[in-house]
Image (cartoon, rainbow, N blue to C red):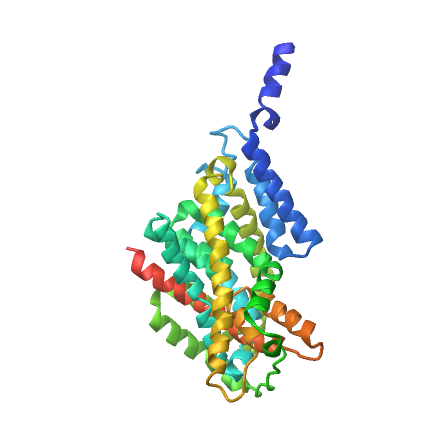
Length: 376
């Protein structure tokens, strides 16, 4: 009886766990706390946090329990990540959610979304300098776009062994937008600049809204054909939204489809952070470079807005340049929050959505360019 009891105890997770499992379980609990108590991207952090708990329960090898075992349920669900299927379906939902009219009303603001992508390419060079292989460096650099699905998609194509740390880093920084961006925004702008009021945007016609996803798709994908899977779904989702005759499909894309995929993506990405795979010096480097990428992207958008003001008759508020990262709509909300702290009657949200949306397109194009150069 005593031998049976000892054998039972030795087969429990308590006996098989080591300090690395404890560290990762703590990280998972912190993610869940931030999502629930602080409302930091709860739709992402709660599934990812619980996925980290799932992935870090010590289990026997060969029983088909670990995500990294080819016969496990989690492995089959994870195929949607490694194949790039989940990110594309999320882009479909984003397109069905998004109103591009703020961007169409003042197209010049799209330049701010493009400028913020400097974070991707500067971090790519930084990762190369630190000794990462070119494909790994490209996957890390895309964190600077603050676009989780794009980061996962590119990592799946170029550096699948780094999907876990890259995805967790990307979503962590997306969730921490209200913490990371405000200090950079205050540092790089004066109070006078933060008080600038934007002129009311023009009214965009329904015809323009319907034509844009078709023309936008053709232009973007002719520039970067490798961005086709992401941008094809994004613009298709937006066409469903705007054409009105396919409202049932648009409703499904922006509700049940994106919600289901977000759950599966969050759980499986979280579960991929298995302690023996995730806790490496390489992962620490990725988190450091990810933070650098995000900071550079925010600063690039702000500084380019200030540069544009040297030539514009009607000045733009440089704060909206920070929304050039594609954390939609959190970056735009942070711009609104900082602007209203200076002047409670100044409303910047709808203006900030223009670079915010163009940042989504820009990061996908950036990923397509990197994939086309390094995917061979």
